[in-house]
Image 1 (tube, each protein chain N blue to C red):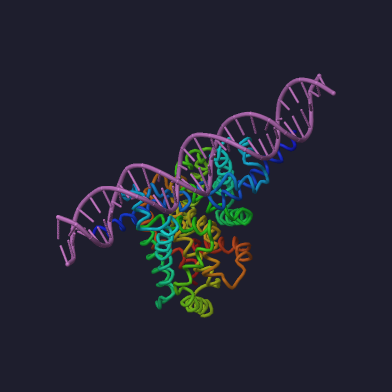
Image 2 (cartoon, rainbow over the protein chains, first blue to last red):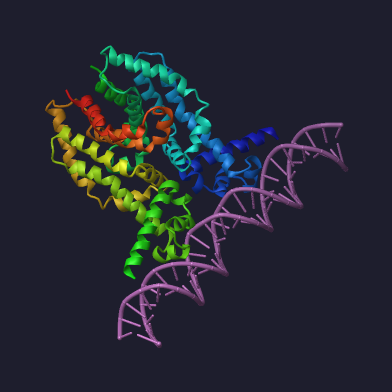
Length: 202
Length: 202
DNA sequence: GAGTCAGTTAACCAAATGGTTAAAAAGAAT
DNA sequence: ATTCTTTTTAACCATTTGGTTAACTGACTC
């Protein structure tokens, strides 16, 4: 039955996302994924040949989610400060919905750096990059912003946007124990953009 | 023989640091740690009862390395801008020596958040925190710096300092393919401090 | 209503893995 | 030299784990 099949497949994907994000490829157990999906382990292998195969699908999915905001930013034709506001907003929205993304990806890329190559080339990040680097350089030359390496500016924006989600448990324990970090993160996009713009504008 | 024993123990620790940092607790294999240390697996268990025990020691070691800069910063009695320069320098120095620290810790804290509690309380971070928060608040009130939540300012500084090391493989592939990222990171501390100070100063 | 086929399961298997045992080396101690 | 303790190893063990097999189910076809 087609409907039933799709339902099962989706329940597998949902379970796999949860377990892989929480425990990583090495720590995840097929049995636990099957249990979480409410199915038999053999059925899990019926739909996804191997743990590796299932993982790859989940990982690629996650990588796309994390990369799209950057792609969008690099291809964005808006004025620079607006672009900065845009990427901050997009990243915060995405990460608020999928807070586990940063750690999941960073972790798996660390254990097997070759994962980046396989997938990253698909996305056309590198194309749009040149344009944005030029835009930043032009803003420097025209005296709109202070001198800064364009690549490092981008890195700074991403650092400020992504790291708090990756380090959330520690930040919560150390810095935001008394306040609602959820609320803080939800409204942080604007403040990050302001922080960056304030730093570079003349 | 005492000397030989210590030598073996140290070779185990060196190996464990490498393997755990690379593969995490779940992905690391006792056999691989033994091989890397150049010893028998039984001998590994002779010195460290269990994988968990060995891991805990390595993890605590790493956590201290990562926390000390923050502790130092929070307790630092210097003037605010100087303090910011100091923490940036310390973090970059530490992470340049142990670049794997951020991912290792973030990863293991994600899979088991309770790890923070066990160790973090030992460090007296929370004590000094109040002082620095006040210092920042005072700087805001006296009009020395723009209005900013002190906790978020600290989070921003750490984000800018730590994230590039955590995301290095991806950043290298996407942003710094043509340049020497090692060199960039080695000189980045100052630029991060400038970036932050530029953003908050009036 | 027999046959077919996708979906599902219980039982099973081989390899990997953390950990143990018993005995051999290798030093100290006497 | 002999004993005693510490260090080291090869062989072994129990459990976990990814993956497979063969049988069952239930809908749909003819």
